[in-house]
Image (cartoon, rainbow, N blue to C red):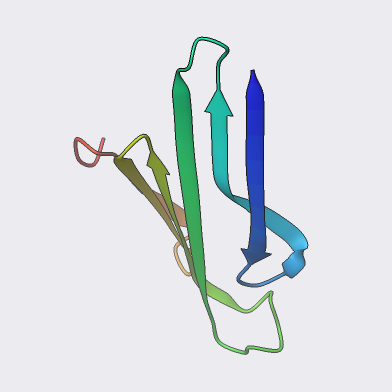
Length: 86
């Protein structure tokens, strides 16, 4: 099995906390698993990564999109799957 990973920067921590933005796994039989990740953050002060308002991460797995949103005011996560909110 081969794995290829492309790293990108986290929106708050940049390359101090790299994110695997594209991962491709290929089996010897030719099956392929592809996932991509996009992460965004809203902060009240761009110089303070701890001033988080909301964090969103969108993951695409073999063409299916999963989204997770964290809201710091309520300390809650909302997870949306391809088939809707669980």
